[in-house]
Length: 81
Image 1 (cartoon, rainbow, N blue to C red):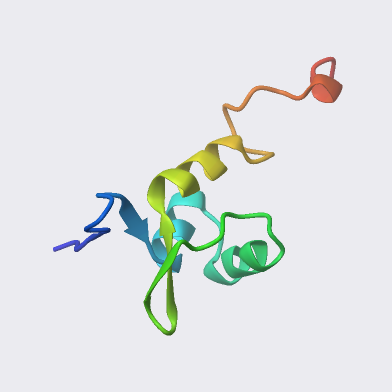
Image 2 (image 1 turned 180 degrees about the vertical axis):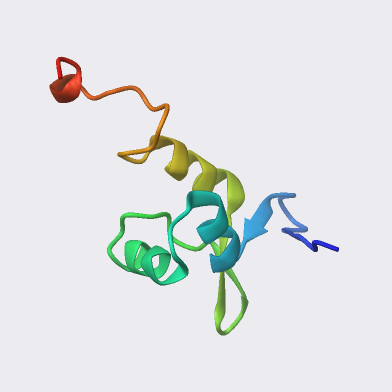
């Protein structure tokens, strides 16, 4: 069984740190640090006092667009190398 969290009001799928970490390949502690530094998306809700939740689509967009991800278009500065 693999339970999921869906926001009842919006129908959006929500992820905990563990799902964000699994999807991005970023360790949980690093994910938290990225969030604290404003690099990764901010949580949009909390399941309880200790469990922040992120919009899964927002995390997927972050992963797709972040530097160093395979398959992403090169930046102008690295196009000639």
